[in-house]
Image (cartoon, rainbow, N blue to C red):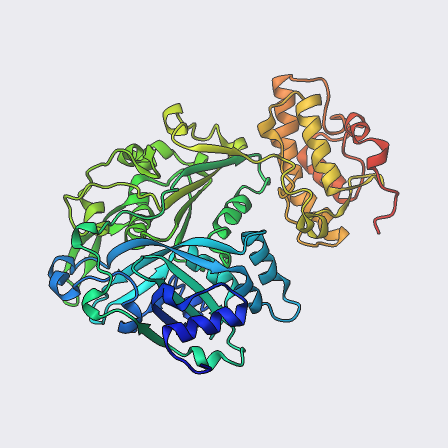
Length: 529
């Protein structure tokens, strides 16, 4: 029985190895596949978001169709069908993957399973017919997302199909397990070929299995971490996403500006020359069209379009006829539009109706201090969910405490932390100067990134003072919102040049009323150490 390479033999070994209640008679197919870094998405060059199964026997434990019979009707379609199949995972098995003091995997397992011995995940099964190559099965969805968090290169994935059902069990064998060789790449069946589980062509569906597409705008004062919040949302799906490296093909990012137009967003006719230097005009897709194509080609993956600084462009004009697509039902556009150029790129059919699919999410940022640059109309606003980012969001994080909260000498040896300073400014702006909240600033208005006291002082001088002089103090004086002043009287500071030079010399620049608002407990001693 030790080397019994039958379904019953493999199931019995798994049951004994991980103390599981499994019966080999309950299964009619099993496959074992060694996972590669490409399968797990740890190969940064590939960005692959699925587990690829190209072995024809392994493919057969999943629903199949007569590929050759239907190939003429799908020659321009990448993915032949999508199915969501339930797969059960075992906590006892996955805990065996924790090696040494690696608490990360253990934390992931405990968080997902909690007190349950098993969990069920949806496994997206895609039959991908690639050009000039054999078809392959691609496993993705929440099953793949979970596996990639706990498995490593060369670990072995075992999937067993329940008898006469489209229900599956999955286990992982540690690559370092002494018995790993027993679970070599293989597929075993207890049913005859003519009895394989089949899917009729009428049962195909090309809709995305993901139904949570949304339109969300994160808004707040400058420096509150709106983009940081968006990055965290994306990392819930793609944990290794790095905005600086732009390392994920499913995340598209663009910053809007006053000159940004519909043609920049959607695409436009541009001149192209051929090898004979003949010039012709071709439609060159913009970022929105490219995002739609990615979402159409990868329906079982989440696609993100991030629009930074939306209030700095005329977004109604930027979206144009796409405005109608923003109404969503079950994650996708409730109403379609006709746009031949987009349809040719996305669907290869100029007559195809254009929609935003349910696996595509639009995430935007709006700086409240810029809302008067281009005012968004109510009709546009109500098609987005609005998430407010407080001026105190992130101020208690370890990153802020360790790298972005230095002590600042604001004049006459008055030493305060950056957190104390920016929060006191916010209270003074609204309470004492009578200005609106959109004039406030967030904890990351200045990114100190571990700067020493001298550098931190220069950053405040160079990045904060002009904003306070022009947008805060001058506005309050012009609007007569208060008799209070943020800075010293005009006989002491009559220009920004005076302010800049005095602060640079660490002389007193802030008014007595502002210093008083700090409170004695907020002020450090006269040492900057």
